[in-house]
Image (tube, rainbow, N blue to C red; front, side, top):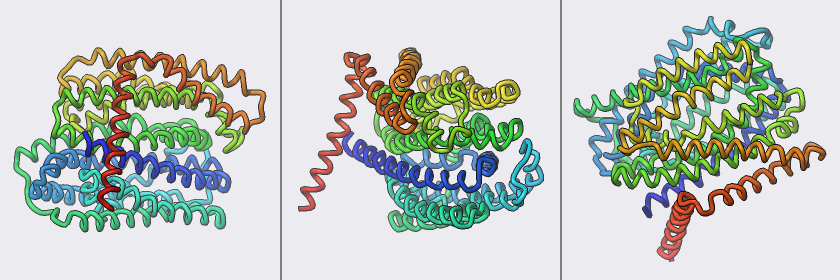
Length: 520
């Protein structure tokens, strides 16, 4: 476990540091954005982001499928095979970038119809949309395919460092443009430039580190057939994800309006900030899991999965308990009482958070195993189900309806189906124990959130807003962790997960000691 554990821990720590720093800077810029331009501009920006996310479906999961195909040949140093895969990657990205530009420009006349009610009349919708479109398309023509070498080499930390440096520049420039000029045009023009620089720099680094890997050669017909299957399966996954998440902002804009979308974006920003940190943690070990799957038995990987899943559920319960106690006071402190939704909407946001994230360990292992083809029918059903429920509920329940549609889709379709795919096609065992663990975890999360919210309101609601927020945050974190320890302290899963985490930490510590000794 040694080297894989050390590399995973290093990727997690650098990934977490990277995300925390980026979130702090992004938060500062987002605050200035809403203070200078207002909620209507924030809603408009969210709409364009959602539209471009849908356009990004043209990528169709090609990058993920190629990276999965590269894990084994890269680990075994099969240079010719990796080179052939890189060549496919390069050609495909040129085609994808062209499709995005052509389709994106073609739908320009439809943009005004996606907005219910008013929008800032002082801006040119088409021009703003084209600038955002350029920010997305530029990466496909600027050696973005080279960055996959850093991923399969488990060197995500390099990309993180480059991104940190460029984001510092981006946020500083955007902060100045907003604070001094109050210009939305100047704010968005920075994005294409930064995206271009990121791809050029990471491509240069990857070429210097791995000069033996070039875009030459051809893969065999059997390998190409296998890649096509993975692409189709992953493409359907991306379509499903877009229908379940990317269209939410578009639906809110179409049926409710930009002001409501701006408020939704504030709450979703907190969700997305936490999601970014969690995703950084779990994606940082994706390459490690992929490497483990190439070299270690399915039974060994299943045991590691159960330990990761237990730790993951613990983390989700703690975060959910903290969210339900601090969501409202934080939004009020940040943007004022006019930006608040009611407590019911906030509570549904917390449920939305837990349900969306409880499946992530399954997705981690499923993606690392490349099981997208086996999952193809689920994603079609999930996407259509979510879209239909979304359109039905938004008319009656508004924002809550949008959130409920995703929650129902995850519980009814996504969670049981993805779990079945992983356990049947990779672990080759029953998922009964996993389902029971998830049911217990969800029930415990509900009880923990209800108790934490009740006690925090009872103890601290009489305080001023900022002291109340701090006290609620500290209380929720400490209380939920202590309560979980009391529940699980004699549970075999807790003891195994505890032992697993200690082993990883010891492996990292021993590696640093060896490195320090060798340097002397």
